[in-house]
Length: 296
Image 1 (cartoon, rainbow, N blue to C red):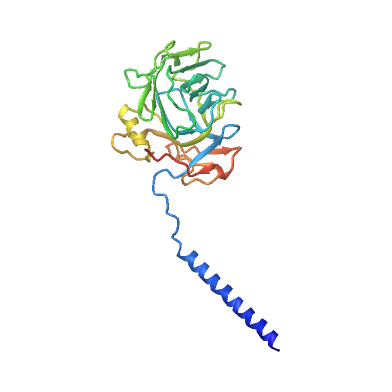
Image 2 (cartoon, one colour; image 1 turned 60 degrees about the vertical axis):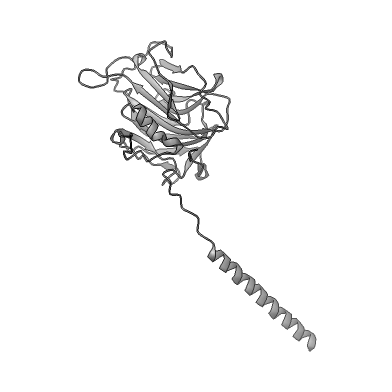
């Protein structure tokens, strides 16, 4: 039966060839170098669709001396974008964003819980638009102090504001009328006992932030110019829980989301003193991504 022997011989040879290829493939796979682990402080960010994605937090704050810091990468234009907003039981306010309808300006405001509002935006286009990569934005609010070193109990309109883009001052604040735009006279005092709650990437129903956000922080103090430069760090985020160089305010860090690093969807851990975590809303685990600021 020569034909059967020939078929058997070919089958054995084919099996041997397949086994040899399989072993070679396995060896190749085993010899592949493992992925290089990210050793930077920030390896993850969170991507928002600009439609209905946002993060709800439990962080509450009063209208006192504060600094807000955000790393942001904007991916589309067309409306005002609120990176941070303040809410209470009856109102959605806005706290910190860009005023895109007239050229990508810093915008800042508070609502007092009674429908009264103070807001302002700086005069010049800061260039924070889509296609320009990552930027670091910082907003410092100062109410001044009384003789005992406590925030002075003045109405919000007397606050001064300083805003920074990529470590440089781009808006030097002012009092009511310069640059403030006003609604009715607000009742929210610095010494108010009614707290506001921080929300990320959403203001009202139409002002969702489109793009990526990373390392969001709030201090119960006003950072100095040198500290702002230090935390910008030439475009590379640093760990804000420890002092570093000119940055000396880690003890005043109340709220700090690393935005994906060490987080498990949908909870975004607060590494500040308040320990009020955030919750990803209308989002998926795939919105935690590896697009982060890298400097340059």
